[in-house]
Length: 121
Image (cartoon, rainbow, N blue to C red):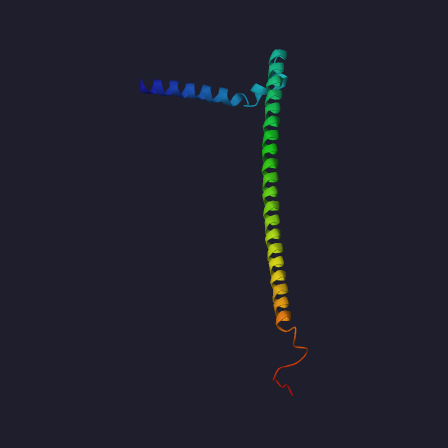
């Protein structure tokens, strides 16, 4: 009984494995082996999948380009703010130097080259 069950199981396994290995997995979508109706359905499905893929790629490309534009705009704004900060600091430094120069000239406007007791011989 056991041997007949084992031999029956082995025979079934052998039949399943030969049937699975006999047909290549790509044959079920081979347009040369399809009827005209099946071929047109297959081609329509392929075309639909291709259009969907192209649409998805276009959306991803648009999203990526928008992100790049946003990043570039942020960088430009950051550079403009940094440039404005540096220019303001430069203007403040120039104003401070001008004020110091005016203060020095106001303090020494009546000196006329005199050293007031300092002999630099």
